[in-house]
Image (cartoon, rainbow, N blue to C red; front, side, top):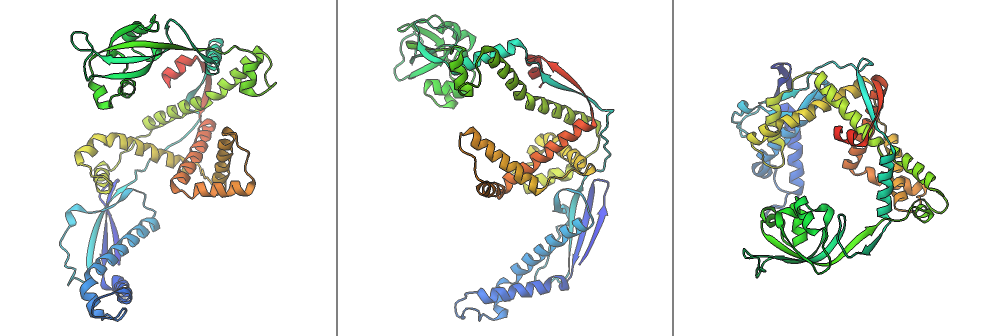
Length: 447
């Protein structure tokens, strides 16, 4: 077998594979013998079918299969041995589809297109400066969180008059053009949260009492077709275009009363005696909020770095090859027009993948199997802790971790997560960071 590579340009190459009889005949003959042992053909005893009969019936398909296997193995061995960095997988060259005479031809030549990974330089240094933003935990934010906790642990009570934030229970009925109940129209006993209504409808519900009626436009009840469908007992497709008048009759009004901020609440949240005063409670919340927003700060910093490096590093991709490759390998049929429409997003993701892989390679970042196992065990213990279950013994924990990692998709995600964490650590050591506290609203507006 003879394999040669011809570079078309920096990003595209063609591999030529020449196959002769000595390359494939031993494999074909071996496969024929296996077929002969297993073949069940009327008129012949099992395993006693003449070789000539087997060859006549299966010879061509065996030849095609064995040459395809030989091509695949040899092609990827050549790529690995020569350390060729490719994007996607080699594709049979479109204009080399000459008819093959499988009955008589003894030597074959196959051409494959390859997309080559671009070469580029990338330096991470202290000259690159970033602002590492954290959320400022001020009194207003603590107050908001205290209020949220008080509502979460509060009690539902029945009230006479609806105000903003209340839940109204009652009946929806559809009206006709004259304002009369429409026979066969929408009728649904439902619940309405005033906080979730559009402003136009909210005004119609606030101030209502049990027994009161109000009329609203269906479009003003919700901007979400799924929520509207559930509220009115209709399907989502109907909800998306629904434009009718609805009468709502109030049956009852519920209000979530906030819990008192006292030791009873502290004990419910943190356990008996862990927090004994409002000051301790607020200090505890302050710390929890800081920890809560750590991941948000990390994510924003990481996204800022990604955007910066994507703009800093310039290289091209073998775009036309990649478009053909996407069409060829997609499980669901896609047209070249669909690929063209979505290619920019794909190319952006691929560009970052190449940059990240170079960072990992240039900085000798590795993730060992032992690290993944330990991380998996930590995640399992965290999950059991959240569920209030007793921790596992070492043997059971190891078995559970191995079971999780036996799922290739899960294992891949965990490896990628740990690589991501190490890349993040590298960013923090390589770049110059200015720490800056910003208000909650400003932070999330930017993030």
